[in-house]
Image (cartoon, rainbow, N blue to C red; front, side, top):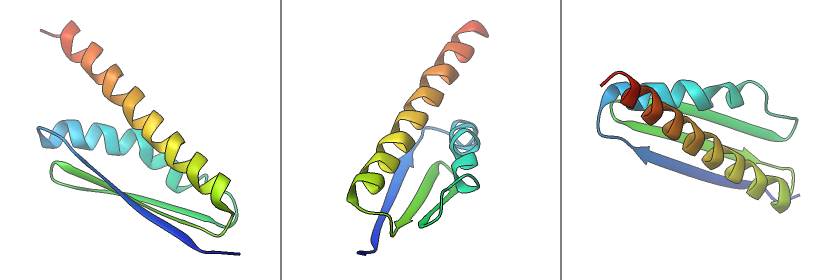
Amino acid sequence: MIRLEATITLKYDDDKTAEAIANAIAPDNIKAPKGLAIKTVRHGRIVVTEIKAETGLATFIATIDDLLFSASTAEKALKVVQKSYK
């Protein structure tokens, strides 16, 4: 089986937003199935996720898609919450 790796870097306007997004997608770090490793960390305004897979290309691509969808959903939810407090 081929080992596949990706690093996804998301940059935000402030530390609080980056922290909220990192917290929203970090549970994937724990729930990864066998053959898949996901690690999300935050460095200031930047959220970095490393994905390593020995599960095949389809699973690898689906994992990246899921991660980006989760980040997008968290961003949208955060915008709604921020609007309600203005």
